[in-house]
Image (tube, rainbow, N blue to C red):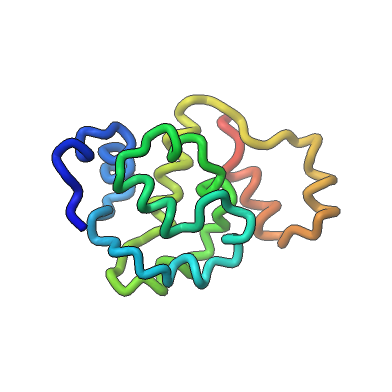
Length: 134
């Protein structure tokens, strides 16, 4: 699927492509990234769906999705991608776009509840790295 000229005018497509350095049109939705993702069950859009939202220029859906914030940046998706797309880098770019809006996505007071949920330690550590705007 090629990205149309209208889609390329999308603010999110331009910025995610620029920040990540990835060719978003190379993804053909095989789903291998999503099949291996350990956090997919907590995402509102699995990785392949999230890439599709970006490809379609659905700016508001991309900006409001929890998918980049739930991503553990474990690179399983990147390793599994037959097209060599660094999906973890795309997730980081999407997080960066939202962070530039200076909005926090995690409150320190909710840390105890997160730990009691049995979240993996990598998720708790990444919360402070990825979910605060400061």
